Amino acid sequence: MWASPCDSSFRACLLAVSLLAAPGLSLAGDEPETSYSHRIAQGKFFLEQGMNSQAHAEFEAAAEMASGRSDPEVHGLLAESAYLLGEVGVAVEAIKTAKALTSGSLPADVAELYEFLTTRFGKVLVIGAGSDGASVPEPAVPILDPPLKRAYSKAIASLEKPVRGGSTSIWLPVGTYRVGGLLVEVRAESTARMDLRGGVGAAGGGVYGERNGSGGGGGAAPAPAPELHPSFLLRIGGMALSQQGNATGGGRLLLGMEGHFPTAFGFRLGGGVAVSRAERITSPSPAPAAPRFFFSGGVGGLIPIGRLLLAPWAVLELGYTRPLDVGLPNGYAGPYDYFVLGSDLEVRLVFPTTESAAGVGVTPEITFRFAARETRPLGESASADPRPHLSLGGGLDVGLRFGEAR
Image 1 (cartoon, rainbow, N blue to C red):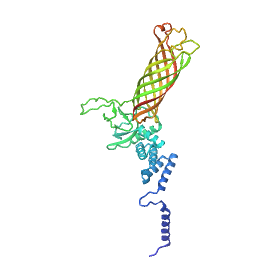
Image 2 (image 1 turned 90 degrees about the vertical axis):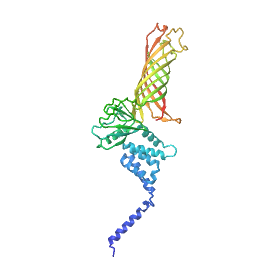
Image 3 (image 1 turned 60 degrees about the horizontal axis):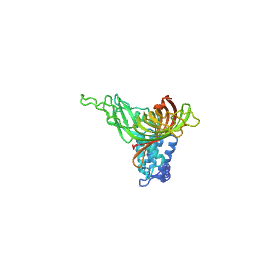
Image 4 (image 1 turned 135 degrees about the horizontal axis):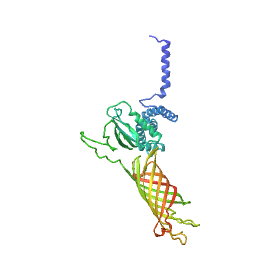
């Protein structure tokens, strides 16, 4: 036997490649740290360049390595890249793993992503996807936030595949969806159920407005009410008014009880005390302040905007006011007592709910108000001047809602 020069050269090349690759080879099944670090660095580079698919592949491979299984950073990066691709289910599982692996408090960016993914999306068990005549879940309130809308579109696109047996799972932004003639509520940290098959009248828990018959002779079953989330509201604020051509201002304290059907509709009943000018006085000195006690009620919508809620509301207010005697000009003969009727148009920004140490959900909010008030004199002293007067203006309130932590 003999070896040709070509065979010798080939074996020499193999030996050289083996020597060059030796530092990167694993021993006894251990992955090299340099390979793991390289994948993390490469994935971060792809993420910064907007190459989300490539970044996700790198983080996914890194998370399966021995070093990555216990590293919360790679699972947080895996969650971020999965969410950017619309893979919400993968993102939720990855961010929960990152939290479980973290000792102490989460880094700010990971905590923000965790709060967003676990409060803005809900899991949905879908039956009958892709079947003939299948319904498509449609938001009862339009989804305006681009990332949430992209996640919704990705989930709906997955339902358009050919019919499959059994059920499948998708993740949708929290809110209320129309499925055929029914309404299904999707909530965070729970699993809703949607039956998309045509002609099916019972879609399971979390649905209201459905009909449910049995044996062909059943009638309409009582429709369970949608879940209501009550909360206690504390709000303070100020306002500027134009009152019969004169500028004035005031402030108020509002206490109330609110009920919300998540990301769909809300209502409020409450009351409080305000301070502003009430009567018409022609005098060089300003009119004295007048405390006003009021009751109010309001209704409005709840529209998701990213991690916030935009809440346009209409409010009706009824109250009573009387100017302080101190400061009234000498000889003032009234009127003293006033009935106040008014309306507010509110635009509220509702921030994410946080949980207190006592397990109570605390929701901050800022409210911009346009206010109109009609003040009507009361009593015998009003006979000399019974005309109501109008006040117009705007205000800004800040408040907190306290309720069930979800």
